[in-house]
Length: 507
Image 1 (cartoon, rainbow, N blue to C red):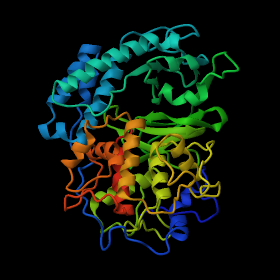
Image 2 (image 1 turned 180 degrees about the vertical axis):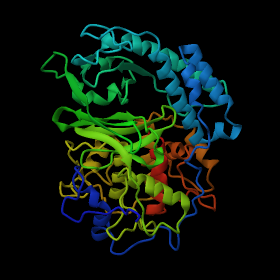
Image 3 (image 1 turned 90 degrees about the vertical axis):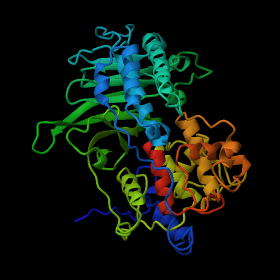
Image 4 (image 1 turned 30 degrees about the vertical axis):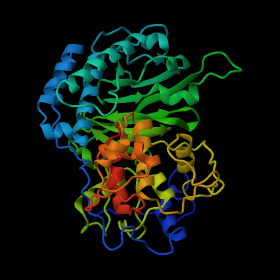
């Protein structure tokens, strides 16, 4: 029997983050007097640039990477294997960027191998003693050499892409890698790392069962920002432990369970927990917590890992998780795949009658909840600045977080008006901000001129930069008339396809 996602009708829903599990049901009951089609009869024609990549990543090239030049060589060979059309397609360019980041991490991680880490020793790719209690101290002093090397290799990797006709759309992230054989370790992050050029730091357990933790130091300014009244440095401790492991049915391939402990139970920003998927089909997998609730997770074809964005203490593992809706079987295939992929990782939900209702219009609150869940950026400690978004609101934490991180603004100075239907311009303005501020994408030069060459009608000038960026990245659903039609309302099928494109770009 096919599994159908359900909504819990109890007050408070089933999710830790408040009432958002019941969001779709709440929207239907409280915001819309009747099912509404955003587009009139039928569903949109989904002729947007495909968010699916057609390029094959030659990860075997990465096994030959030993340093900067071999990393550039691997990227060069990958680029040469791509067609001219792929070098122009946003989804394929994203795959090339992921490959370049994997090559940078591989090259930086193989520069040197240091002995067991002590408090004052370098973090340069140390191999830690698995039998001793392990503390990994991450400070400006201990990461400076690794960060410098990773940054230099990154610049060479970017050059290798551009020399082969691939124009990066975002900054290629450099990652400093620490390798360990320890089954339990505590990361101690020092506040002075905020003054370094560190972009990403990854701690990898290299012996089976393998897993890794990756974080961006800049994400933890909330926890590490020095207190003016207390000049001493601040630290953040993240405890990681392999708590148990099972094997895939009929095999001896271990599936790890990893326990994460963070101060207060939740961080202000997500870290990434990565697992090799083993012999499983990655598209059917999701990382789950101890209760079985899925985290936002996706397969990275460059690192060949299932990556999950986590911000909470829990015990995490992965497994197959399939979700189906009865009213999508005859709908557009692209929409069906997008909805099922997003439902698998708890970004979107259906209704208690096993339907998704793709023709129904989307409200401002519902859309914000979708994007914040996608990003894994829902902070329960934040407060809403809007008088119409109180703690009883179905999306209180999502809206408060979106405002805090600069992703949304109010409808006016005091109100969010979450029950109002969201327009196409508003959707792509939010997406553009996310691509730029959260994911590091660059806005096209002269966005107004760019848009005039893309659409036959006019886009609101205040939204030019964000809409131009979303358009270039292939996230805009186009009209057969060639218009942008910015005041048009969007339905749940449209929005699922749009959010899936954003989800595909998580890294």
